[in-house]
Image (cartoon, rainbow, N blue to C red):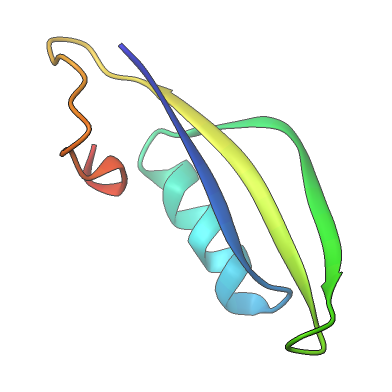
Length: 68
């Protein structure tokens, strides 16, 4: 099965670490990152989609995607 996640967060090193952790666990970048201003928080926000093929499992909405 192929899984999809959208990683989001403020534009800081923690977001970069979040993406790096996903890559180190076998997730692949999917498309280009997005970058937008959040007027409520006053911060720039980042988003990056990632995908991963997982063999031998069936999808369930209860699964924790980050643990796959």
